[in-house]
Length: 354
Image (tube, rainbow, N blue to C red; front, side, top):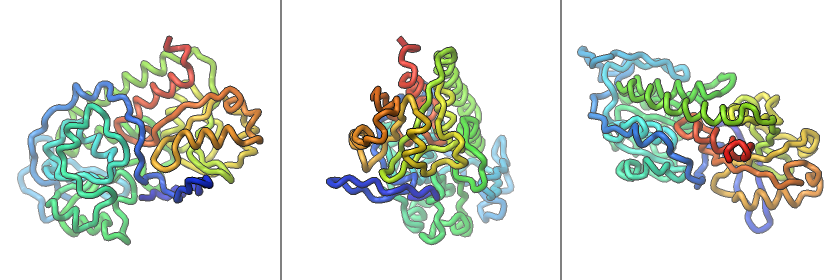
């Protein structure tokens, strides 16, 4: 799975790790599921969603419909809520389940992290189509009317899963807004908009509003707890040995740091992710290193690598062994990002939570 952000090889003599994109399988730590359980309502099944030129279009619209959605350059008009959705990647599945849409889900695929505790039972009840991205034919076997992709790789043309291919088969598609080409930066507003948009498509706007309210409350509470704390400089370490692959100023990870009372030392990097030199890391003297956790190289291996580099010895974060660990899935546009703000705030400012 790849969203255009190539990562460098991270090589250890005893544990070579293949290069990956942002979305390969990751077994991450389970994020806190605060506020989700109260929102897990059982949704009744709707009827098939439609595109503007879909043969499934119905002359009779459901209550609150039609709904027209512009998504990453694709405009779709739904006359009824989808009733047989397939998700490709885990964060779309978790978002749908958090809106009580289990009964609208015909299948899911690419489980790339430990499922949130409040969602485990519902997630296990959904047919898993594949451990990675399913083939176009495998998706069609579920007789879906809607496919929701978490990364751009969900709709890769060379693998036969283009959005046009689904449209031609009479199936509507939606791509997580974080992946829309030309976006100038991702913020928590994108998370809230994503939730509300899916709520509109499935006719559960009330649930979406309630979920957004809960997530906003979590974020506001964490930010308020650290508003008077000293600004802490943070270097995000994703991967890399010859150079460092880090979070730039255009991704959601950058705002999560800001909301948690920190400052991304590479916020001036004009991209979601990018490579920087170790000399730049030394020059910017980060107080804390945030390690992104995903399958492959372990957090322990990453810490060992960082602590073993003589050139980094005088970096405050290394000298004081100040690390915070953030599951990479928590930095995506989805229901986990609010928890990430609290987790980061506690890691950056533990004194504010005593």
